[in-house]
Structures are given as structure tokens and as C-alpha cells.
Image 1 (cartoon, rainbow, N blue to C red):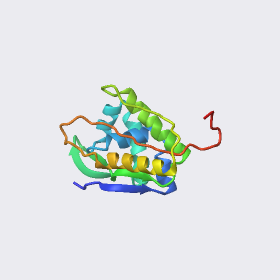
Image 2: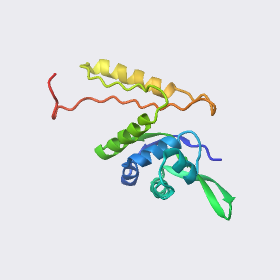
Image 3: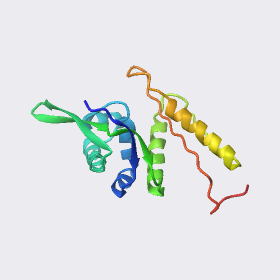
Length: 171
């Protein structure tokens, strides 16, 4: 079986469009650990197989997922899909892509087994403080390791941004 790359830079219009739907985000989340078939994904996400198939096709055409195995079953061929990369880095986190990613995350959070951690803070930081915090968050996210197939899956989303001045509320 083909192992996914460590990271993929999302830079084409097709890739950004493919990431612009919450269900496609959820499919990518689901394919983050192991390959799965359309039927397995549909059952896991509670979505019709036809819808999953449509969105997998879009992700595949954009190079974000690939077929890594096929099996003959009851006169048909079952395809196992896998992400092409463990991590996807956005070159331009456009509004549509970010909205879809957060929409997919919201759906994931609504099905969480435990009490998820979700913290939003706005801080006034110097450039040096912001860079130290960015480096620390990056280190935490990149040093997290998988504990194997038997351990429960956890999602991790790390973001840090400098708040724009347009439409900013009171300080």
C-alpha cells in the first residue's frame, strides 16, 4: 500500500475548490488515519453513498485523495481511498476554504465522544511575542505522534492569525 506524503502544499484553484465544502473536509478528516471505501465512509459519516462518491471524485481530481487498493466483491470492484498527504498546508487560506474547514470541524465537534477543547482568545502581542507563540504552537502540532491503530482518534486544529483592522470591534 502507498504511504501518504508528509505534507502537500495546497496551491491550485482546483485544490482550493475541492476544499471548499464541509463534507469534503470531513472526508479528509476520516481518511486521515487509514484507507476506506465509499460505503465505509458513508456509514461512518451518515451520508448517502452517492454523495460520498461525488465528493471523493472531486477530491481525487484535485489530487487530495487517491485509490490505494481495489478488491473484487460480489461482482463489483471496491476501491479504498486514502489522503495523498498527512498534512495539507494552505498557501492562501481563502474565505471559502476556511469556512468549509471550520464547517467540517464544527460537524466533527458535534459528534465528539468527550468534552472537546475549543478556546478563542484575542491578545495584544508584540511581533516578537507573536513569533514565539507561533513557534510554540507549531512545535506542539508537529511533534504530536500517532499512538497506533488501537488508540482513539483525536482531532487537532491549530490556528493563529493577526486580527485585521477592518471591522475590528472595541479593544
